[in-house]
Image (cartoon, rainbow, N blue to C red; front, side, top):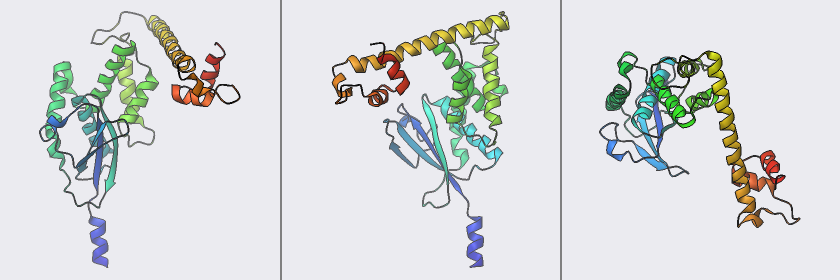
Length: 262
C-alpha cells in the first residue's frame, strides 16, 4: 500500500489544451503544430482542437510559458481563440513534449519580424499578441476602449496572479503607447497635447455610442415591424418585451425605450 501511494504521488500530471479555429488549419497540422489528439465542433460551428501536453501549468513561471504558447497560436493563426486547459493524470494517450511546438515558435517569430523591426529584442508573445489586437481595434474603431482590451486579454490568456497584475500591466503598457500617439499605428509620437487627445477621444467615443444606439434601435424595430411581428404580441395585445429583447440581443429597458417611440 505504501509503494502504491508513493507511485500515485509521483505520477506526472498532464494538461489538455483546447483551441478554437474559424479558418481551416489542417495544412498546418503535423508541420507548424503537432497533430492534435482529438477535435470537435462547437455550437458556433468552429473547430476545436485539443492537445495533451506533457506536464502541468500550476506555478507562475509555468503559466507564463503556457501564455507564451497561447500567444504563438494567436499570432500564427487568424481568429484563433484559447478555450481552456485542464489538468489530468489519467490517459491512455501519449502526451506531447513542448519541444514539438518549436515550429509554432519559429512561425510566430517570422510573422512578427515582418511587421515589427524590434520583435527580436522582446521575446514576449503575449505582449506582441496584445499589441496586434490593439492595432486591430484602432483600425476598426479609431481608438482603444481600455475595458474592452483588458476583457479580451483575460478571455484569451491565463493569469496566475490573484490580482491579475501581469496581464493588466501588459494591457496598460500597450494602451498608453497608442494613447500617447493619438491612436496612430507606428513609432511617431503625436505632437498633440494630452488635452486635445482626450477631447478627440471623447468625441470619437460619442460617435461610436451614437452608432451603437442606432444599430440597437434598428435591431428592435426590425423585429416589431417585420413580417413576423405578430409572433411577438401577447394574447392581450401587448408586446412580449422579453422575447423581443432575447431575439434582438438587447435588454428589456432598451426594448421598452424604442417601443415608446413607435
